[in-house]
Length: 56
Image (spheres, rainbow, N blue to C red):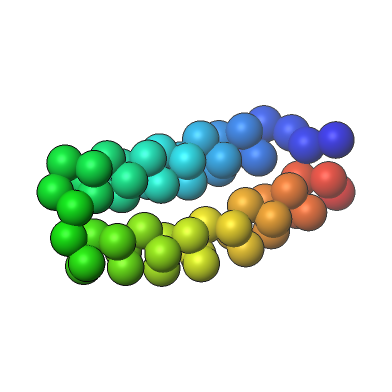
């Protein structure tokens, strides 16, 4: 089970991913595409870390 900390963290991380994706949709450039890729490299481990930390 996860808690409120995970909820808040996941919402913030998700908002960042949505912002990066919307920026790419509005102006699809190579740089914005790379930004989404690197954001996802940060997003997934942080999300998993929040899940693990929230379980304890």
